[in-house]
Length: 173
Image (tube, rainbow, N blue to C red):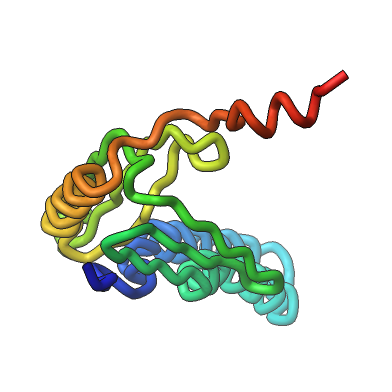
């Protein structure tokens, strides 16, 4: 069977709306404090701009982090690459997946996104979250079907077992 891509993309930037709203609230609070203090002290615009710049940098980090994640799901495995300055790529074979769960908060439902939580028996990736996925429930169902097909072809993957021949030859006295 030919390896077919089920999903390829990055998490939706709508997933970062809470960070944007928190940043806006902090900016309003900083401006309000400066405005109230300006009746007692001269307004220091350079300090206000410095604080606003720090908040904007903090708000932009989740957006940059989301933009640096790449998720590819095909009929064999899930591959995700992430990193802003250092790139890390991981793979999870579909036959190792035990459960798939979709999670959507109220605000995520407004934007049509959600997170898929993947539980596996892979020691390196026991629990993995795929955040900000558009139409997460439909993708989870497609992924469920792909996992079932993969298991039917290869059988369910067990925990990592060292083959008996390797073990006996490595520890031969």
